[in-house]
Image (cartoon, rainbow, N blue to C red):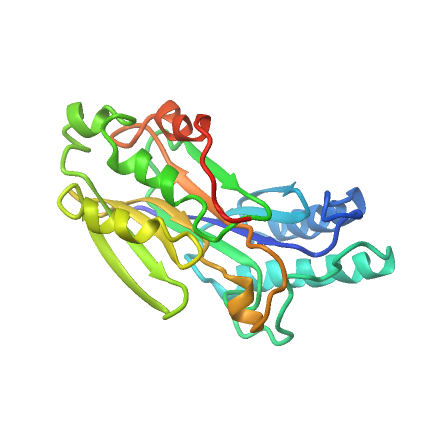
Length: 264
């Protein structure tokens, strides 16, 4: 069995300069230090620390599988330390997304957003990371539909035998805690009927129908449902694989060239 690789993208609003504006350098430095140490100790293979607006984003590549307690604890401890520093610096919204105190093996349900996928690496593995700030949890619904189901955007759906069978979309009902898998093109209308309600229905995963190859994974966190009250807009993140029997990089990026509106 070939060794599998896991990509984990975990984000959290731990504090920013006034106006939910940007994560300052001292906070990014904490995350950089924590992940560098984790790499040196062999917990992760590589990493990238960045921000989108006031969200601290941790991108980690490792071989421990999805929802691994050690990886999630690394992210949780990083966010906790960053939030403590944010309080010390009197930053705006310090620790805003840390809605629960007790870590229980996963950051899911505690406030931070998570997108993960475990893959068997191809010879070349182009992956694109998307992150948004102050919007709806399902803000990537329309681009994902266009990338993996719209032949006017993705020519491979017509001309590439690996894609001609279509893709499967897992849609999560954030209010009811339910999920459904819809196959395109034969269940395209049912998919469209759901994903227009971006506050409730969120595309969480996409697979290629012919072989169940994982193609995309997104976060489904809704802060208001975790906290029981309004605590700010959602900040979705997403991982998308491209090329070699999947949509090309240009086809993945093309939907974002056209403006569309969501709540946020």
